[in-house]
Image (tube, rainbow, N blue to C red; front, side, top):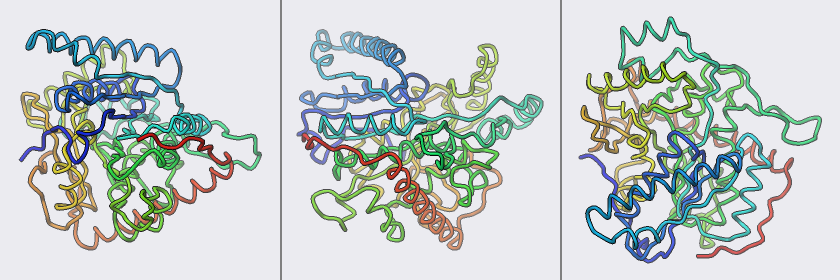
Length: 439
């Protein structure tokens, strides 16, 4: 069974405004998530409900450009709707409110400023999508890339080993203190900035809020070491940051991690021990899509897209090619009916939700195997809707022992990040929470 997005229920219909924050929205997957969220919201949610889409960029110029392009996309959607039902656009247009906010995830003071801005408003958040990030590459090993693509196209373009990283990248100083520790640049942009933002914005969340993290199909165990959580010595820091994301999210509801999770994401309704009263975290990935993160010249970008299409035609379930198609899993995690996500994970186990495709580009959402966790955290269980093709060739079977090791590693990284959070909150100062939540 392929999981398809549907309108959310469980009380969502009564909400007048549905507020979503998406980071890194000015291009690529982030922009596509915003576009697809607009489209699916308008045609799956009640006519009485409005989407308030908060999209983040790093500066005002990018924010204005993103607002213009999102507005253009909305008008295209409205014209197409009018073609089916004359005059419907007048009703639909009023149901979308677009607003840009600024944040640079490499500057923790900027992250803190955004949190304080939203806390002052006191507007409840129904979902956040942590998409922004950087690759930390300086180029490609072209001889290796060409050889791998020509001889092993599907695997080489799904699990690439030819990007050349800039090892040991660190952020600029965050404070004036001389004893300030280093912060890994890829780690901060892809994980830690969002981690802090989640904690700081938790007063605006409740048990129905969904915290959606964007991972990668190539988040393999060998790219990450718990001895180097920030990836300062890693050769594949980008992929390692995505493996860290998988570890955090997939172990977030296990009893062994609760001492950390309870501090990171406090329960709502004054029930500090009630896991069900906390916002839930979900992890998704877009499959293989063409975005600007590769940083290729236009001719090579065309060849990249051609290779992706060929891989799909040869049977790859992960080559969606377009960012809009790749956005299906993230949008699913935001607006899927409770029976399709929180209730499904409760029944069948927590999973990594990927964007998958057929030969003709018919995108869908499917459970993706995570080495050490499997498809649902249960050894040997493959729930309906899982994709078992296109898996990493060097993967190890998830045995009971391997599954226990994944949980131990997850608990360890939770402890590491909570320690870092406490340290940096001490350096940055207390966050100001001046407003009550408007529900």
